[in-house]
Length: 215
Ligand code: ADP
Ligand code: 5GP
Image (cartoon, rainbow, N blue to C red; front, top):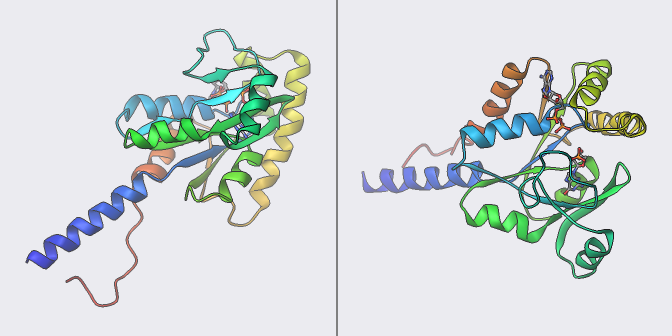
């Protein structure tokens, strides 16, 4: 009985560890990553935390420094890179973006699973670290829908829409890399996509059969 209880405790500790693995969320700009993650963070504030990236891009209306991003100059970002303060960094849509060690540490020290909304170059870098992250891709139902959403958001100039749509093709090409992503979610109907996201992140996959049975 005592042995069983301790096995249960070990299983529960492993499940907790699994749930707290960082989650890298990729997908083309405008697909709805931010929308999905904001909803998840709102519903499960004790389970998930957002990795606040650094970026050299200008804040959008409504974006707050330290919440959505740490907005900084190119010089500050380069100095941080030189000091080795980033887990990964990349040039995306003509700006610099990076995930600092401090951003991920702040979330994990709060006992939460860290959500990283980063591009595929960043995902490649995270794969080379010991973060043991899960990798999720959010895909649009079509490129036409993607463009409509990007324009509908009203945050980008025509030139920036074109640039982001060109880069979207490169992001989508990662879907052809076998095994790169653990989960792919098509964000067609938002409620369905959100349900899929919760299924992927909240349900713990069944443990491997132990071979010898419990106890
Ligand atoms: P990302 O963070 O991937 O760049 P956003 O979350 O900012 O994308 O979403 C881009 C736009 O698309 C926003 O205006 C958002 O409200 C809208 N959007 C998100 N998901 C859907 C969906 N399933 N159907 C229609 N519009 C959506
Ligand atoms: P946006 O300018 O729309 O907020 O983000 C543009 C792109 O940059 C998105 O694909 C987003 O995932 C990516 N991005 C945001 N933060 C980071 C980061 O820290 N590192 C990397 N590599 N990409 C990021």
